[in-house]
Image (cartoon, rainbow, N blue to C red; front, side):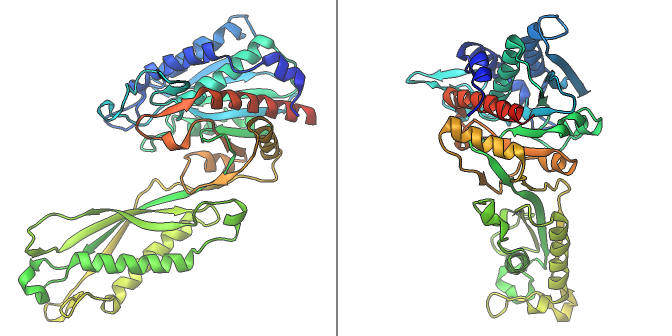
Length: 443
């Protein structure tokens, strides 16, 4: 059971200040959309609202113990680090990952305005707007936690640190969010305790995520009239057969891993096409080239570097043995000996490869999160998905004990008509207090 003294002193999540702050944040969301170069978010708008909410209980104003700091690596794109100082050096509990950017929203496709906080007339628990689940709701939630600690001033041995970050939703621009903070050593003290990444959903510990490799497989054949198919190398047929062969080799080399059951992954590693493209032409033309693009979702027990190497080997081997690739019909072929032509494949791997994460199940932070979840939510069911969270594997590799949780709704993540539930956020608030209380009892 969490310490009654801390829970009683801090109380529950106060709806009015939470909703008031969230309303201000959602009101900025039109300018928080992250899809450069067209949409470059201005996270400083959110950062300033967070700072304004916490300054009355900060050391800067003399109204409280909070240490509040804005850190910017690009104009208009701030991060915020907030610390409630503890009494024992080298002890820290941190809540990180509450990002201040959002994915784009098209108002024409929504049933309500995505860029303002609205309420369901029949369900006051439902808070609607872009960012309510991902992730402005968590920004407001953790800001309220820090505000209440600053108001109540409990004596804690651990420092409690919150890090609100820029630039989570897009990786085209780097070095201005949590990656910049880590590089500059501004989060080093967070290694002195568990780091809770608050950007998942459904109130349960997310203990594993997938890596992502995006690829483009180009087939080059010979364009020709469809009535003279024997003089063509059909790039579409070549690409389809080649991809089937690549998928077969991938699943042989990267089968379901034994640890996936322990981590309760919903799916094993997968490779699949998601997009077709070709230069165009008439229906009576056999295409001379086409590209299939797709992705690999990789459980964290396999190396993305090894997978990339294998993909390149697969394509090389198919090119060397193109005659052995299955064809389609009596005149389908990938080699024209009389013309000294061979069909061929080229594979391109995008640079922004993301690695998956397997959280440390022996961590005291994981144990505290599970106990708090069971206590507050009523049950605990850790889960893993091959969806991906950027940045956290890099934190883990840097020596941080990363655990992940979130209190939005997975079904509305990046979706039209996004919303969260105040009751879920209120439970998240109590989970945080329980975690702090449990870890305090260890010292």
